[in-house]
Image 1 (cartoon, rainbow, N blue to C red):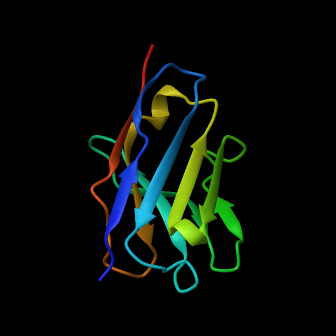
Image 2 (image 1 turned 90 degrees about the vertical axis):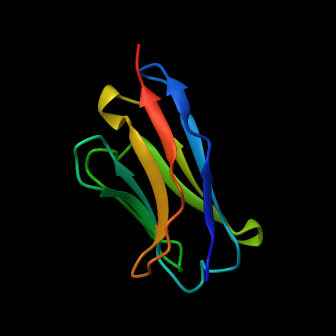
Image 3 (image 1 turned 135 degrees about the horizontal axis):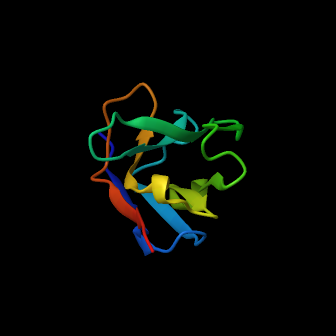
Length: 113
């Protein structure tokens, strides 16, 4: 079993930045691809970024060039640095090891002027 705790969300103005964190209860980064997902009201959950066990990263087109996924294996923590935030980035953000059933509670990101 793996517990995931996301943090770092909040209210930010357009153009601002936030850094999300996801702490895992045990070492899993060498096993799973770690993803950041988001879900806006009335919309399906979408994959925003992921990082493989080898450190390769990939991003949705909507966030490419603005978001950066990284990890600290010693701290069992994966991060999502979000810059140049837009109104449409407003959502609940979740981390998730792909191809598992493990989800955290999510952290709310609201971009508003």
